[in-house]
Amino acid sequence: MLNIFPNFIKFNFQSLVLALFYLTLAITTSMHILLYKEDVKSSIGWIALVFLSPFIGTILYIFLGINRVKRKSLKLKGAVNIRGSYPNALIGNFFTKLPINYQQFITLGHKVYSQNFVVGNFIEPLQNGLQAYPEMIHAIKNAKEEVLLSSYIFDYDSETEKFMEAFKIAVNNGAKIKVLIDAIGTFGVFGRSIEKKLKEIKGLQYGIFLPLKFPLTLPFVNLRNHRKIMIVDGKTAFFGGMNLSKDNCLLNDKKNAIIDITFKITGPIISQIAEIFEEDWEFVKEKSFNSIAKSIKYTNSEGLTARVIPGGPDTINNPIELITLGAINAAIKTVLIITPYFLPENNILTSIEMAAMRGVDVEIILPKIQNSFISKASEANFLNLIKRGVKIYRTDPPFDHSKIFVVDNEWIFIGSANWDVRSFKLNFESNMEIFSKSLAKKLEAIAKGKKENATLITEDYCNNMSTLKKIRNNMYRLLTPYG
Image (tube, rainbow, N blue to C red; front, side, top):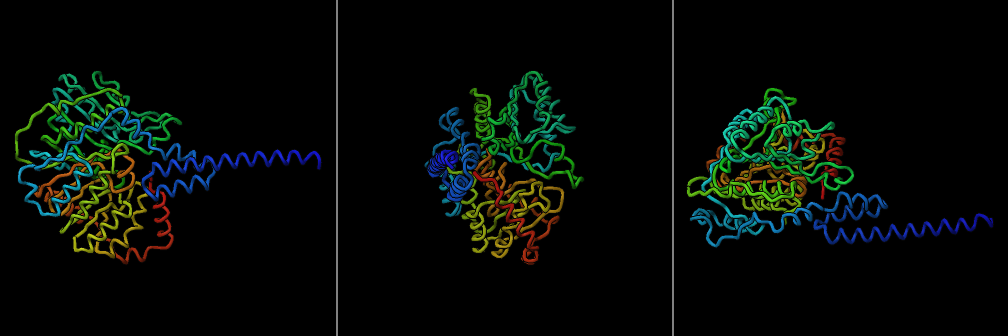
């Protein structure tokens, strides 16, 4: 007993020290969470993890919960220069002719993100790679000064090889080419094949957004550049949610094909798109860069009225999410949502339900087959939406990656953002807000075509779903990425 007693005291002293260290660490981490996490649910989740998983919870928070990109980005870029001042008189008489609910919505939008609308833009929807890629490649081949391209996924295959050849022609024309690709979106176990091809083109510069260097970059693994942007000579842009892959051209292959949409754009709005690319390029390369798009002057007052809304962990107020929420609340006739992933938080779900209950015709079009198992979580929200009068359609294969949001046959939101927490809070995204009845009509016609190849989800479908599927869906919902 005499030999054991000192060891017992020593053991208890070590346990007490360890317990005090754990408690101090947990309290300190919780204080950081309370100071820097604005969302209540996120704060509760992280604090619970920190206390219930000693040390492991704190380590996970340090690596995954702290938004270092925001600090690094703001330090590098300084004040965000993409935002203009809110104008006393909005463009011409256009906005004064809008209903009062939209005048109020525009006022809200400028307070969320004070980017100015510009007139004189022409925007053409291009469906799938078969329509979009030839236009993009033709523009690159004819470039004389500058080609800027940013893509989340940029595969190297038989279709994207055509982009490589076009880049070579553009370089020979004297154009300066800059290409940005995301480290996760274009990830390959044995290296990025597209990176090797880009490196071979003399005169082309490329950058990798937050390249993976474990464990140093583990805190950034959730924060990706999801934008899809191409600008040629500052005069022609391609903007939307379409990646670069042959899958976008395999329309008859129901297993591998991807249906998608992007937009060909001309007009002064390109200057706003270019500023997003500039900031991303400066973030990756840590060098200042100015696109020639800013030097182009426009005097045409015809065309569409639009502005660009960037989103990401270095923006304030989650502007894409708030603009989305504001648009739903402003709707008086119709809401059309086409998205590959539908996992918004309760604020948006409630807003959609209330819009339908007010008599707004709300339609949501989703793909029946998802390319992400977590996307099945969207089914957990179907029943409540349908009970409130929301129509939910699911299209047959192939997988539909299109992103379209139209309100009241006139207001349009297009871009790279999905309807989920990752896009609204974590990823770097870019969307465009547009007022145009003519473009809305084209997009609604596209939606009509999708519904012809879709199934309307009913209450019976939701009620007859097996208990195991309901449990699965709600489990997946718990795995939704959260910041």
